[in-house]
Each structure stands twice: as C-alpha cells, then as structure tokens.
Image (cartoon, rainbow, N blue to C red; front, side, top):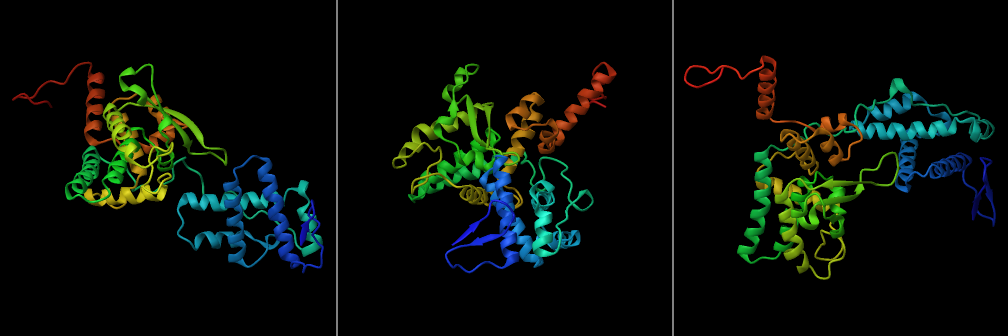
Length: 368
C-alpha cells in the first residue's frame, strides 16, 4: 500500500510494499498535485483526465522526465504528427499548463526536483513555438455548407430509405424514419451532433410569439459546446422553419410511440437508451452516399448550412448568432458561406443604393 504525502516530499511506503522508482514517484506526485489544482478551478473531470493523458503520452514519447524536458522535444513531437490545428493547440495547451504548474514557486516543485532529481523544470511552450488560436472554429475547411440542392437531395435520400424499407416489408423502417427526422432537426435548429443526440422530448416548448407551432416553438439545448472545461452551455433556439416542426410533430406523435417503452430521449434505439454520436455519424454517411454527395461532408455541415441559409434569407445577424450560440459575431461569420445568387442580389442592391435608382434597362428588356 502506498500513501502520497500532501506536499511534494515523496512517497511514503507502508505495509512492506515495494516503493516506486524515484523518478516515477516524483512524476506521479506532480500529476496528482496538478489534478488537484485543476479540480479546485472547477474544471470538468474529462478535461483534467484528457490533459493528463497528453502529458503521459509526451513523457512516453520522449522517454525523459518533466524536469529534463526541453522546447525542442515538444517541437519535434508536434512536428512529427499530422494532427489538426485544433488538436495541436490542445496538446500544446496541456503541456504548457502542466509546466506552468511545475514552475510556479508557490508549489515548490523546483526545489523538490533539484533535491530529488538534480534538475529543475522549465517551461517548454511559449508564444514563439506554439500554434495560434485564430478563431473559435478550426475544423476542416472542406466541411462546408450544403447548397439547397444538395440539402434537398440528402433529405430525399433519407425519406426514400424509409419508403423502400416499407415497400419491401423489411425491418428497420422505424429507425430509418427516426434518422431522417433527426437530420431534419439538426439542420432546422442548427444543432451540433452531440446537441441533437442528447435531446429529450421535453426539450421542446411552446413559444408565445408563435402559437401556430404548438409545443415545438422553442428548442432548449442543454448540451451545448462547453468552454474551458465548464459545464455544457445551454441556449434557446427558436423554431424558424415550420416545415421541420411538422416533420418532428409527426415523428413524436406517430413513430416514436412505436418504440417499446421509450424513455425521455427524443431518439430512442431498438435496444433501449439513446442514440450515440457515433451512430449519428454512421447514419449521416449512409444517407450522404445514397444522395451522391462528397465524402468530406459531415453532420456538422448541416449546422453550417443552417447558418448560411438564414443569412441568405435575410435573417437578422444578431438573431443568427444567438440561434447558433456563438459568443462572437466573427465566429458566426466563419460558418457562413453564401451562394453566388445571394451575392449577386446583394451587389445589385448596393449598386442601386449607390446610384439612387434602378439601373436602366437594355434594349429588349434586359438590364446592363
């Protein structure tokens, strides 16, 4: 049995247990103290555990201990992998935070390392060798909004899957109808993958300003994207596409009750419980292939589409930002890719305002 001391003074061995190697013992004490500091900051357990995994992975890769780490080791580790920009930032951030904790004089690790290992830890991550956070969204740029034609093809493929299964008398029509509705909801309320998967039936409420929508006037998102280890952020998303509310109402009233004893979850599975994020990805890929759409499109592209299409339709930018749950308008702008027809209309409107009148018609009824 091993009992750790409260301060960085080493492991105390009791009961005749074999002590850990001094280097391993010191490293484990560091990680335990760092975890305690993060928990005191109320960071989520998943973030604390994720950061620890990064530190352990780096230690295994280098084969050295934190008090001997150097910037060039971190640079080599990052450069030798083809990680996405956001992944690189997360890894560098975890290492930087860990080393900041070790080099903080208030915790006494420098002196402990000097006494027990003969070396002192130093920060290995700094502004000159780490990736810059340029925007809230750092995903693959190929994951673009779907055009309205592509979106219609996707939904048609989903609906046709339901009709084909019913016509052939095969099993699976219930799940196919559920999945088709799930993606319509994802698009029509601009939801992230986890947000839609975690929806309960009770998350939809009436909107006094839109009584014609019944109980589907507002979607209360309870599992929004968390920031800096905080709990999931909540937001209200007002229903702006009545056709989607009709599709969801049909599913809730006619299809969902056919599942055996469904719980509160909006998207139950045949075996009980809630549909998973991985299953959402798999269903999306299946419908995408059926519609003949490019492989780089993902579920998140439906959220891009929602934001872009609202902008094209003239929705107030502040409302679009609030619907998406973005803290900054610049983030909403990153998600927005408007079509060429919309751009041409905006250019024409700007020119007409500049000239103070509509442009003269060309011979034959056309315009210059």
